Image 1: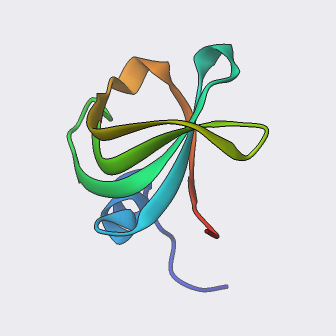
Image 2: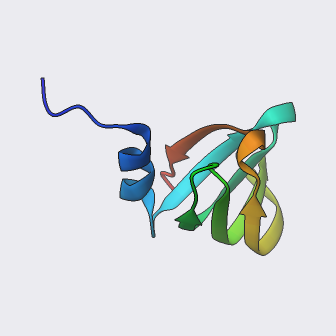
Length: 77
């Protein structure tokens, strides 16, 4: 197997890339991750709220509070 990655290594690899963030209550957001901190608070640029993988609303620059995040995944779109 390859080198072990730590969670912050994976977050750092996602900087300046499109990600999808799954949140509590089933909310999903997509945007370019431009910053994060040790609490996993995340700043997204060009943020979109997704419902059934369809853009429901555009928010622009958004702060996502870390305690609401369930997962972060690279965006394929």
